[in-house]
Amino acid sequence: MATPRKIGIAVLGLAAALVAIIAVRTATFRAPAGFDADGVALAEPVQVDTDRAARRLGEAVRIRTVSHQDPAENDIAEWDRLHGWLRDTYPAAHAATRLDVVGGHTLLYTWPGSDAGRKPIVLMAHHDVVPVTTGTEGDWRHPPFDGVVADGAVWGRGTVDNKGSLVAIFEALEALATSGFEPAASVIVLSGHDEEVGGTGAAAAAALLTSRGVQAEFVLDEGLAVVADFPLLGRPVALIGIAEKGYATLRITAPAKGGHSSAPPPETGVETLAEAVLAITGQPFPLRFDGPAADMVRALAPEAGLGVRVAVANTWLFEPLLVRQIGATAAGAASLHTTIAPTMLKGSPKENVLPQDATAWINYRIAPGQTSEDVMERARTATRGLAVEMGWVNPPSEPSPVSSTSSLGWQWIAASAAAAGDWPVAPGLVTATTDSRHLTSVSADVYRFQPIVASVREFEMIHGTNEHMTLENLGRLTSFYARLVATAAR
Image (tube, rainbow, N blue to C red; front, side, top):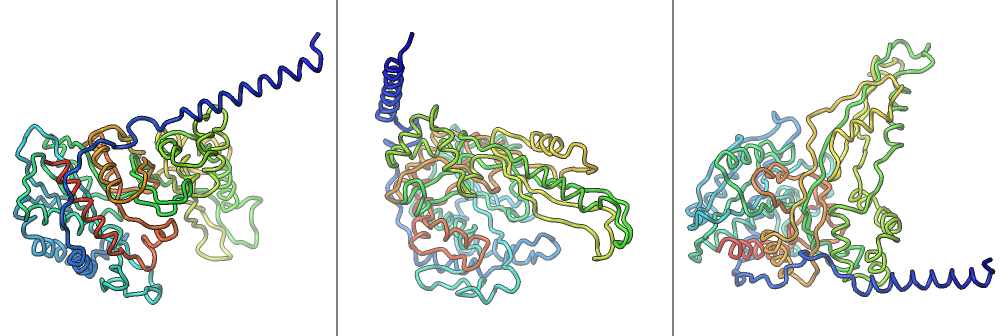
């Protein structure tokens, strides 16, 4: 019979063995192969003129290619004006490329390579911008469409999202073409005209490329950047998006009889709708430590403190702790699961009238590994027994495939990102949507990254007030594109 002393010794032995296992796994832990790009031979840096790029970005901001939700409100003449400005401002780049205008006003440039056996590379940057919220114009440090260059930055709507990248790409192509660079692999530049309202232009360009049999080495679009105060390390980290979430909006309607509010029925349509919304949000998708978000943590763990390394090296034991820590912030939680966000409600047109139907809209950002069918099934299960009807507002956009972190494209982009500053590089998940989601038929490897350095808080300027591109970031962005093209297309 076991004595308390023997039991105690056994427990201590098990504890010692557990500690030893954790210690050994931590000491031998390495980031999974392929996340770094050591040994990639980059082309020599290309000389760029940041001051000239800043003046030109200011000019581009003054051209108001504002995408409104109602296309009838758009001033299409501004799109034509921007296209003419690009042609006049970058003559060498335009002389070297062939232009197709598709989907109305989307631009598709091709710089033909000399080697037909090489896969082309695709660079993307849309040229429409979101409106400035009415009444906030006076809150801007400089007027949002004046393109002012001041205080070490270019100020205005679209400087970061995404005219900054468009100007940087063309500055890079102009410099390369002027220097006599001749690509071996074709270089394709796709600039969508309506990314902010759905991206029909990018979809049309993707269809054209697919019809031509184009299979690209990689596609690079906006999405992630260099987070100056990345929480895991407390210092800058370059995050390259290897996937993006799907997008879907569910409309839920509670039909009702209506009538006068002075004699309401036992349950109104508004109450039924409220029950349905609470039932759906009350069953959130579970947080999971997998996919691109987990890859990001694994890639950065060797750079982190001992606690993080211990947890990541021993996920068999500490995965719940990792999930809890990452999910402690809204942004962190969003990277670990499909999110559910009720955004709009509609009921009666008058305060003393019972609605004949009450409607809610719930926006989902669908995590890789799940589908819109999963979302719909979960919503139907949650609302079983409630008198509601539901359907998609528009056909859902499914999550993108997850791109490789060992491909040539990844190596070139990661090495170029690492060369742009003193920071580690890691894969990540884009929780918003970009035009690149339409390009999965053109390449198996679609990446989303700009080497723009800003704090988590500073990135709030995108779609907000005081959007601006620092001259340092613009110079870094231009040099990055020029060196990437010179490396990948040589």
